[in-house]
Image 1 (cartoon, rainbow, N blue to C red):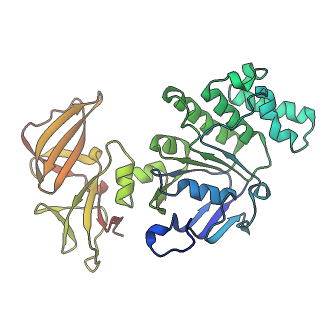
Image 2: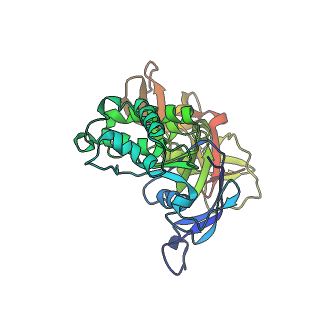
Image 3: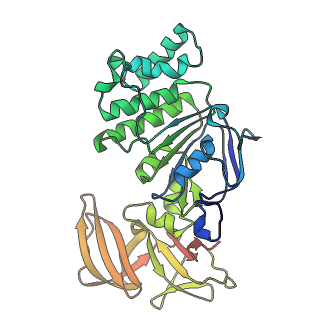
Length: 355
């Protein structure tokens, strides 16, 4: 297992870099402790897979260093780094049995037959593949084949890190939650460093102890699922995580106070009057907004009943505001006023939280 450190990491697929947009990764600095479960979360094209491939050794970064347990491995290949990587589409040997597929990486490392048999049966039981061990892999469903791919990555006990690149993409939606739970359970059992790449917030938040949110080649926030939800440090994090996402409204800053539509808004973070931003906004999640006797005047546009909750679409002068209200609560019709919970209301300058 390994502690992973990335120092001043940047990468471009172009020979010459003239603009900010020429970089796939920009100044990445991060420390991941030994044995942790981490997720790289973000939309397609944000740099997640590029970063994963640099950690694995499939790519050499344009700038910066990759360290395993404080040793520089930037120039080492994947074999020399002792990593296991599970890809988006399962890579298996169709002509082999499930047993032989799981045993393959162990045989390559010259383990004894007894050691191989013990390990294969242990992994098969973890992944519920025991009954199919003698079956040809070609006859398995997509989720069965991906389980084999996962099993091969988990079979070795000598790896520094196990990395997953969107491993559940080809899995039917109703089976995804089963494998997500299984991966979390496996991590708790084997306690190895794991990095999971996904664009799906549910996968990231249920698997990882720490989630790294990426946007346009940068890490915009790292934190626990609770921290990312309750205190987004970038408006992208607020928008990307949560359903519905965070409401972002333009605001003015006067005497250290945020003002929306002429109404003073109390924020959890202090606003430095000397700060100079080209754009200032406030963010508040739909869960922390309530109807009141005074506050921001809005018009009720639509009410959607989702069962336990109602999603209320409203509009003020500055923009649209969504509210998540318990289904038992009465929703005003026509016009109303909104109040924001100060504890979860934040001011942002140029998309980043003002601190």
